[in-house]
Image 1 (cartoon, rainbow over the protein chains, first blue to last red):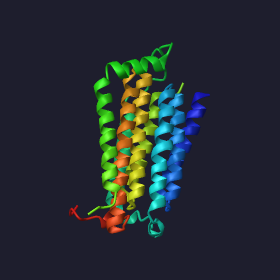
Image 2 (cartoon, each protein chain N blue to C red):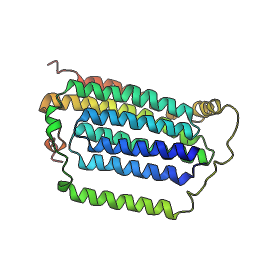
Image 3 (tube, each protein chain N blue to C red):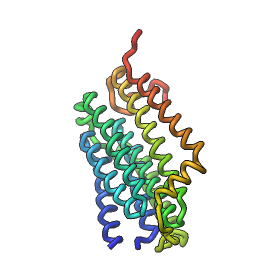
Image 4 (tube, rainbow over the protein chains, first blue to last red):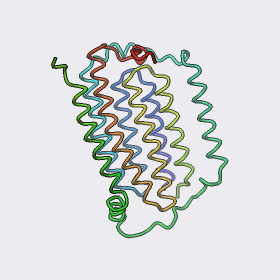
Length: 166
Length: 100
């Protein structure tokens, strides 16, 4: 049952990821990326992390993809649509990628460290409560730093995108 | 149950696809979207390992990765808007002011 769902979500996410890279129209890429994020959040549910699945949908599908679509709407993409996808020009990059992929596949498939089939002692009870206790007790400083980073990015994005006032 | 290496394998495949998008495509928007794909494949690995070793830190790191990604996308799209306004191009190859 779980394996069937995993294969379904994984296949759809790989197909939509390929669509993101291969599509010529950026709008199609953005919509495919949204579908891919939905599949990945379904995988998070399968992994027993419902909080992360909800955050994934809120942040990625709700905020980031809307931002992308707004920017695509603001700028003229017609010139970009005409641009062709030329893999022949980038042969070294493709060779490098194939080598990287083969290396990672060999490492994953040969190692016996990844062969765990059963999650270690799924702790019962309120998982999200324990997660948030860990986040706000042991990881309080990184949490505050992340909020400062978000604030700095907000100010920086406004400064970058506004018109020069002279 | 699903074996752990299936998740790791999915992470590898998505990472290679995203890296292909970053390296091969010349449209800045597609490059940014491929970066999102890369970060998501890493998140899958974090949460899968956290689940199979019964450790919360995988999920916590994934939360921080998501927060940093949101900041990165905001700044990157701000730079993109400024770039389109000043040079009216979307191709990575046309942006060579810093002789990169």
